[in-house]
Image (tube, rainbow, N blue to C red; front, top):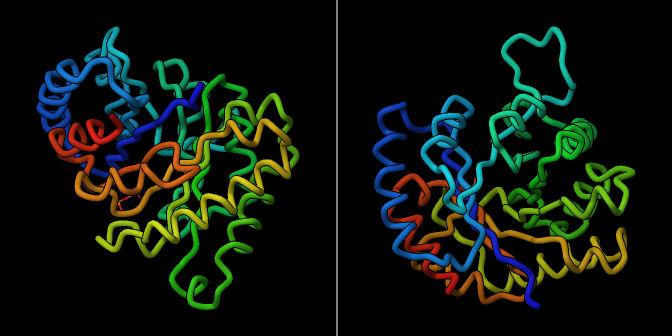
Length: 253
Ligand code: PGA
């Protein structure tokens, strides 16, 4: 049987309550018309919308992801959100180590390792993001850079923990730039990630979903999804429009 495919819409820091409501009305209407969807559909809104979206989604096969979680279980961390809190809202996935957080919040691989463990302990699935900068690519160091990101943030993860893991390859230079990676680069990098996962976890590494992210749109989704070892897409900008995200979902067929 083929591995399941995944589509994640990452809203980042976008949408007021009313905008989220309007979006969901449109999205659900069109999503229902597409059933059965050919990919597991996951929305990653800002924290404050998670509960509202959960109510709106009801029994529909749409899952929720948080864009982050704190690395500690609980405590005096004003303004932070724990993995258990997210799980209690019906959240099933957590983005870990998005490049914007690595850059803006200076999140290190060691910190991400704690977040991955917290997420799994809370019975959710981490989506570990990795990806090289333009500078690293220009120096031909992309595969070794990714290898280090993965090794350091996966730490001592056991095979049973790794069964919950998803990885997203998101080259930093492709995020929000309109400069999508070529299918050649995607194929090479996803193969490199697959090899690292197999080396680390054995045959299980073959099952860990690897998503592509970075300027994915309805126009390029089919060719990205046709690349070997691409098990789905992590979509930022294009996910902000309900119709656009639905068109990308349709490209999984
Ligand atoms: P983008 O963002 O689709 O706007 O490039 C992807 C991401 O940051 O996850």
